[in-house]
Image 1 (cartoon, rainbow, N blue to C red):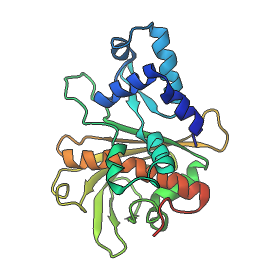
Image 2: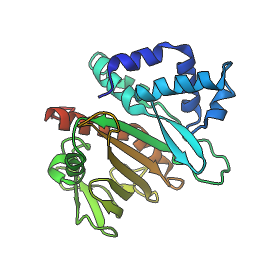
Image 3: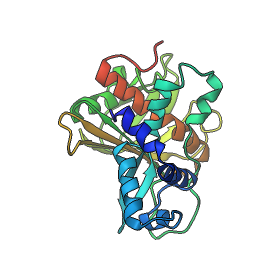
Image 4: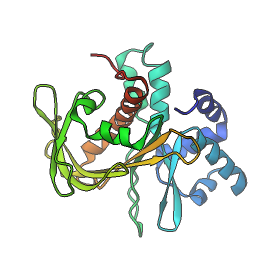
Amino acid sequence: MENENDVFKALADPSRRTLLDLLHASDGRSLSELCAHLQMSRFGVMKHLHVLEDAGLLTTRKIGREKLHYLNPVSIRQIYDRWVSKYAEPWVSGLTQLKTELESEPAVTPKPSHVNQIAIKSTPERIWSALTDPALTSKYWYNGSIHAEWNAGSPYVIRDPEGKLQAKGELLVVDPPRKLVMTWQLLSLSDTAHEQPSRLTWEIEPHAELAGVTLVTVVHDEFEEAPNTSRVLEAGVPVVLSGMKTLLETGSPLVGG
Protein backbone atom coordinates (compact mmCIF):
# COMPACT_ATOMS: atom_id res chain seq x y z
CA MET A 1 0.00 0.00 0.00
CA GLU A 2 1.26 3.49 -0.81
CA ASN A 3 2.30 5.27 2.37
CA GLU A 4 -0.46 7.59 3.54
CA ASN A 5 2.19 10.15 4.49
CA ASP A 6 3.39 10.22 0.88
CA VAL A 7 -0.15 10.97 -0.29
CA PHE A 8 -0.63 13.79 2.20
CA LYS A 9 2.81 15.26 1.42
CA ALA A 10 2.07 15.13 -2.30
CA LEU A 11 -1.25 16.91 -1.80
CA ALA A 12 0.34 19.60 0.39
CA ASP A 13 2.02 21.36 -2.54
CA PRO A 14 -0.22 23.81 -4.48
CA SER A 15 1.51 23.09 -7.80
CA ARG A 16 0.84 19.38 -7.42
CA ARG A 17 -2.78 20.08 -6.54
CA THR A 18 -2.98 22.17 -9.71
CA LEU A 19 -1.68 19.23 -11.75
CA LEU A 20 -4.33 16.97 -10.24
CA ASP A 21 -6.98 19.58 -11.03
CA LEU A 22 -5.78 19.71 -14.63
CA LEU A 23 -6.06 15.92 -14.95
CA HIS A 24 -9.43 16.03 -13.26
CA ALA A 25 -10.61 18.51 -15.89
CA SER A 26 -9.18 16.51 -18.80
CA ASP A 27 -7.46 13.20 -18.23
CA GLY A 28 -4.67 11.64 -20.28
CA ARG A 29 -2.42 14.70 -20.77
CA SER A 30 1.16 14.85 -22.01
CA LEU A 31 3.96 16.63 -20.17
CA SER A 32 3.86 19.47 -22.70
CA GLU A 33 0.12 19.98 -22.17
CA LEU A 34 0.59 20.16 -18.40
CA CYS A 35 3.60 22.49 -18.63
CA ALA A 36 1.52 25.03 -20.54
CA HIS A 37 -0.55 25.66 -17.39
CA LEU A 38 2.25 26.11 -14.83
CA GLN A 39 4.76 28.94 -14.51
CA MET A 40 7.80 26.73 -14.01
CA SER A 41 10.39 24.82 -15.99
CA ARG A 42 9.66 21.54 -17.74
CA PHE A 43 12.04 19.86 -15.29
CA GLY A 44 10.12 21.31 -12.35
CA VAL A 45 6.83 19.95 -13.67
CA MET A 46 8.45 16.54 -14.20
CA LYS A 47 9.62 16.50 -10.56
CA HIS A 48 6.10 17.25 -9.32
CA LEU A 49 4.64 14.55 -11.58
CA HIS A 50 7.13 12.00 -10.22
CA VAL A 51 6.09 12.84 -6.64
CA LEU A 52 2.41 12.36 -7.55
CA GLU A 53 3.14 9.09 -9.33
CA ASP A 54 5.25 7.77 -6.43
CA ALA A 55 2.34 8.57 -4.09
CA GLY A 56 -0.02 6.65 -6.36
CA LEU A 57 -2.10 9.73 -7.23
CA LEU A 58 -1.51 9.42 -10.95
CA THR A 59 -0.39 6.76 -13.38
CA THR A 60 1.16 6.94 -16.84
CA ARG A 61 0.70 5.04 -20.08
CA LYS A 62 2.65 5.15 -23.34
CA ILE A 63 0.25 5.87 -26.21
CA GLY A 64 2.09 5.95 -29.50
CA ARG A 65 5.10 8.21 -28.99
CA GLU A 66 3.58 10.11 -26.09
CA LYS A 67 3.66 9.41 -22.36
CA LEU A 68 0.24 10.37 -21.01
CA HIS A 69 -0.67 11.09 -17.40
CA TYR A 70 -3.91 9.85 -15.84
CA LEU A 71 -5.51 10.63 -12.52
CA ASN A 72 -5.49 7.52 -10.33
CA PRO A 73 -8.48 7.81 -7.98
CA VAL A 74 -7.71 4.59 -6.09
CA SER A 75 -5.32 6.29 -3.64
CA ILE A 76 -7.83 9.05 -2.97
CA ARG A 77 -10.50 6.39 -2.43
CA GLN A 78 -8.28 4.69 0.16
CA ILE A 79 -7.74 7.99 2.00
CA TYR A 80 -11.49 8.53 1.88
CA ASP A 81 -12.20 5.05 3.28
CA ARG A 82 -9.63 5.56 6.07
CA TRP A 83 -10.23 9.19 7.04
CA VAL A 84 -13.62 10.34 5.75
CA SER A 85 -16.23 7.63 5.28
CA LYS A 86 -16.43 6.52 8.90
CA TYR A 87 -17.07 10.11 10.03
CA ALA A 88 -19.25 11.37 7.21
CA GLU A 89 -22.87 10.97 6.20
CA PRO A 90 -23.60 8.80 3.12
CA TRP A 91 -24.21 11.81 0.88
CA VAL A 92 -20.50 12.69 0.82
CA SER A 93 -19.74 9.58 -1.24
CA GLY A 94 -20.11 11.76 -4.30
CA LEU A 95 -16.87 13.49 -3.32
CA THR A 96 -14.89 10.39 -4.26
CA GLN A 97 -15.76 10.78 -7.93
CA LEU A 98 -12.55 12.54 -8.97
CA LYS A 99 -12.87 12.68 -12.72
CA THR A 100 -15.30 13.82 -15.39
CA GLU A 101 -15.78 12.35 -18.83
CA LEU A 102 -12.82 12.68 -21.16
CA GLU A 103 -13.21 15.74 -23.35
CA SER A 104 -13.87 14.73 -26.91
CA GLU A 105 -11.06 15.79 -29.21
CA PRO A 106 -9.62 14.32 -32.42
CA ALA A 107 -6.50 12.21 -32.02
CA VAL A 108 -4.48 9.92 -34.22
CA THR A 109 -4.34 7.26 -31.51
CA PRO A 110 -7.35 6.71 -29.20
CA LYS A 111 -6.60 7.36 -25.54
CA PRO A 112 -7.72 4.99 -22.80
CA SER A 113 -10.12 6.99 -20.67
CA HIS A 114 -10.23 5.56 -17.15
CA VAL A 115 -6.97 4.19 -15.79
CA ASN A 116 -6.82 2.92 -12.19
CA GLN A 117 -3.80 1.36 -10.52
CA ILE A 118 -3.11 -0.10 -7.09
CA ALA A 119 -0.21 -1.89 -5.40
CA ILE A 120 -1.13 -5.08 -3.54
CA LYS A 121 1.14 -7.07 -1.25
CA SER A 122 0.46 -10.37 -2.97
CA THR A 123 1.55 -12.48 -5.93
CA PRO A 124 0.17 -12.24 -9.48
CA GLU A 125 -1.18 -15.78 -9.06
CA ARG A 126 -3.22 -14.89 -5.96
CA ILE A 127 -4.54 -11.76 -7.64
CA TRP A 128 -5.56 -13.77 -10.71
CA SER A 129 -7.38 -16.19 -8.43
CA ALA A 130 -9.14 -13.29 -6.69
CA LEU A 131 -10.21 -12.01 -10.10
CA THR A 132 -11.53 -15.32 -11.44
CA ASP A 133 -12.78 -17.29 -8.41
CA PRO A 134 -16.50 -16.58 -7.80
CA ALA A 135 -16.10 -17.28 -4.08
CA LEU A 136 -13.56 -14.46 -3.88
CA THR A 137 -15.10 -11.91 -6.25
CA SER A 138 -18.29 -12.03 -4.21
CA LYS A 139 -16.33 -10.63 -1.23
CA TYR A 140 -15.18 -7.40 -2.90
CA TRP A 141 -16.99 -6.92 -6.23
CA TYR A 142 -20.31 -5.59 -4.93
CA ASN A 143 -21.30 -9.12 -3.81
CA GLY A 144 -21.03 -10.34 -7.41
CA SER A 145 -19.69 -13.81 -8.19
CA ILE A 146 -18.11 -14.25 -11.62
CA HIS A 147 -18.65 -17.41 -13.68
CA ALA A 148 -16.77 -18.34 -16.87
CA GLU A 149 -14.83 -21.08 -18.65
CA TRP A 150 -11.82 -18.71 -18.80
CA ASN A 151 -11.02 -19.17 -22.45
CA ALA A 152 -10.63 -16.34 -24.96
CA GLY A 153 -13.87 -15.93 -26.89
CA SER A 154 -16.08 -17.45 -24.20
CA PRO A 155 -18.80 -15.58 -22.28
CA TYR A 156 -18.88 -14.74 -18.60
CA VAL A 157 -21.57 -13.58 -16.19
CA ILE A 158 -21.57 -11.92 -12.77
CA ARG A 159 -24.47 -12.79 -10.46
CA ASP A 160 -25.61 -11.41 -7.11
CA PRO A 161 -26.26 -13.73 -4.11
CA GLU A 162 -29.84 -14.32 -5.34
CA GLY A 163 -28.59 -15.41 -8.76
CA LYS A 164 -29.70 -12.25 -10.59
CA LEU A 165 -27.46 -11.08 -13.41
CA GLN A 166 -25.36 -8.04 -12.53
CA ALA A 167 -23.11 -7.95 -15.59
CA LYS A 168 -22.10 -10.02 -18.59
CA GLY A 169 -19.65 -9.96 -21.47
CA GLU A 170 -17.09 -11.82 -23.54
CA LEU A 171 -13.53 -12.73 -22.59
CA LEU A 172 -11.26 -11.25 -25.27
CA VAL A 173 -7.82 -12.06 -23.81
CA VAL A 174 -7.13 -14.63 -21.09
CA ASP A 175 -3.44 -14.72 -20.19
CA PRO A 176 -3.05 -15.92 -16.59
CA PRO A 177 -1.76 -14.48 -14.37
CA ARG A 178 -0.79 -11.35 -16.32
CA LYS A 179 -3.67 -10.01 -18.39
CA LEU A 180 -7.44 -10.26 -18.73
CA VAL A 181 -9.45 -8.31 -21.30
CA MET A 182 -13.24 -8.47 -21.21
CA THR A 183 -16.21 -6.69 -22.72
CA TRP A 184 -18.51 -5.26 -20.07
CA GLN A 185 -22.26 -4.77 -20.03
CA LEU A 186 -23.71 -3.60 -16.70
CA LEU A 187 -27.21 -5.06 -16.28
CA SER A 188 -28.01 -4.22 -12.67
CA LEU A 189 -28.98 -0.58 -13.33
CA SER A 190 -31.84 0.59 -15.54
CA ASP A 191 -29.81 3.35 -17.22
CA THR A 192 -26.92 1.03 -18.15
CA ALA A 193 -28.66 -2.26 -18.98
CA HIS A 194 -29.42 -1.32 -22.60
CA GLU A 195 -26.11 0.36 -23.41
CA GLN A 196 -23.55 -1.20 -25.74
CA PRO A 197 -20.70 -3.17 -24.14
CA SER A 198 -17.53 -1.34 -23.15
CA ARG A 199 -14.15 -2.91 -22.35
CA LEU A 200 -12.16 -3.65 -19.19
CA THR A 201 -8.46 -4.53 -19.32
CA TRP A 202 -6.74 -5.94 -16.23
CA GLU A 203 -2.94 -5.85 -16.22
CA ILE A 204 -1.13 -7.67 -13.41
CA GLU A 205 2.64 -7.34 -13.01
CA PRO A 206 5.19 -7.66 -10.21
CA HIS A 207 6.33 -4.32 -8.79
CA ALA A 208 9.67 -3.32 -10.31
CA GLU A 209 11.18 -2.31 -6.96
CA LEU A 210 9.16 -3.87 -4.12
CA ALA A 211 9.53 -7.62 -3.62
CA GLY A 212 6.26 -9.42 -2.97
CA VAL A 213 4.19 -6.50 -4.27
CA THR A 214 2.10 -6.61 -7.45
CA LEU A 215 0.73 -3.72 -9.47
CA VAL A 216 -2.82 -4.11 -10.74
CA THR A 217 -3.89 -1.69 -13.48
CA VAL A 218 -7.46 -1.50 -14.79
CA VAL A 219 -8.26 0.37 -18.00
CA HIS A 220 -11.89 1.05 -18.93
CA ASP A 221 -12.36 2.20 -22.51
CA GLU A 222 -14.46 1.79 -25.66
CA PHE A 223 -17.47 3.25 -23.84
CA GLU A 224 -18.53 5.82 -26.43
CA GLU A 225 -21.91 4.07 -26.64
CA ALA A 226 -22.11 3.52 -22.88
CA PRO A 227 -21.82 6.91 -21.14
CA ASN A 228 -23.84 5.86 -18.08
CA THR A 229 -21.70 2.76 -17.64
CA SER A 230 -18.65 5.00 -17.87
CA ARG A 231 -19.84 7.17 -15.00
CA VAL A 232 -20.70 4.18 -12.82
CA LEU A 233 -17.33 2.46 -13.33
CA GLU A 234 -15.45 5.72 -12.85
CA ALA A 235 -16.57 5.63 -9.23
CA GLY A 236 -16.91 1.86 -8.87
CA VAL A 237 -13.57 0.49 -10.08
CA PRO A 238 -11.57 2.21 -7.30
CA VAL A 239 -13.89 0.60 -4.75
CA VAL A 240 -13.41 -2.82 -6.35
CA LEU A 241 -9.63 -2.45 -6.36
CA SER A 242 -9.56 -1.25 -2.75
CA GLY A 243 -11.74 -4.19 -1.80
CA MET A 244 -9.47 -6.66 -3.60
CA LYS A 245 -6.42 -5.18 -1.86
CA THR A 246 -8.01 -5.34 1.59
CA LEU A 247 -9.21 -8.91 1.05
CA LEU A 248 -5.82 -10.21 -0.13
CA GLU A 249 -3.75 -8.35 2.45
CA THR A 250 -5.96 -8.86 5.51
CA GLY A 251 -8.23 -11.78 4.66
CA SER A 252 -11.29 -9.66 5.46
CA PRO A 253 -13.65 -7.78 3.14
CA LEU A 254 -13.45 -3.99 2.94
CA VAL A 255 -17.10 -3.70 3.98
CA GLY A 256 -18.81 -6.17 6.27
CA GLY A 257 -22.20 -7.68 5.57
